[in-house]
Image 1: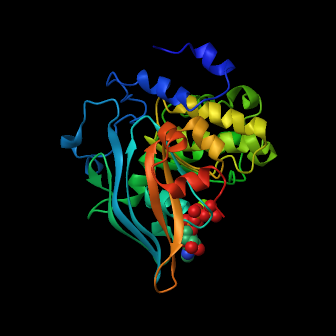
Image 2: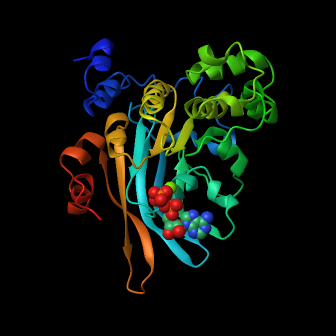
Length: 313
Ligand SMILES: Nc1ncnc2c1ncn2[C@@H]1O[C@H](COP(=O)(O)OP(=O)(O)OP(=O)(O)O)[C@@H](O)[C@H]1O
Ligand SMILES: [Mg+2]
């Protein structure tokens, strides 16, 4: 049964809210043209044969992913699907490789000297590390929002316009900027001060500006690495509400240390942990991946249970 929108907002947030939202997305109409950008992902990034009629289409799939930093084998053998128009959370103790895995999804690790990703990560069925794939094109469609809001020392307007100009999306620039700021729930607070320095905004506003900057170029996926960790509870609640709206158009992967947040916002959760191998080397690995509700209520691995009940470390 459909859950009334108003009721959902007034009740304590339950994992259940994700389920009810998901129910509205199973009609196969989730591929909004806006989320795909004006032209959709470039041909080189799409394997059309991968199209799926299901409302829970896998948009991104990690298969046997290993990540090295130089000789350090930091993350081992991660496999998981990322469902389209859903929020996937990644949780686990510090140093278990959450950011490392997240960065591999849009080839941000390419920018770290010595970082190497092996295994396969597909987006629309196409290996993003395959020959001929342009990492800049990957990042154009799989955007990222970082832990610490990092606006450029420019005006609010120019921050949002930045990626649009770089990508030649300057037709109707002002409209695009407004749409992105509205999408990030920031427009009403800044519309009379667009020329003001972005650095003069509050932390929560800066983070929403960074989300506006990321969505301005109309990506399909948003990767968010602890986007609320520097924010107070009110700003955090705003970002969570925003994610709940954005997921209608975007696929979101969020790393969070806050298990309540993972339970509140996500549809699926990946729990990572770290261990030490026979040679004394510490490495991160995926312990369990499941529907959020199931992972938090009935985890299948005792290590997950220890972590979510606070018995870990
Ligand atoms: N740029 C880097 N160069 C070398 N090693 C790195 C780099 N970034 C991360 N690592 C190593 O990879 C492992 C995983 O780190 P990562 O930052 O992905 O963990 P995390 O789960 O995101 O931790 P946290 O919760 O503290 O953010 C750690 O052992 C870390 O030292
Ligand atoms: Mg991290």
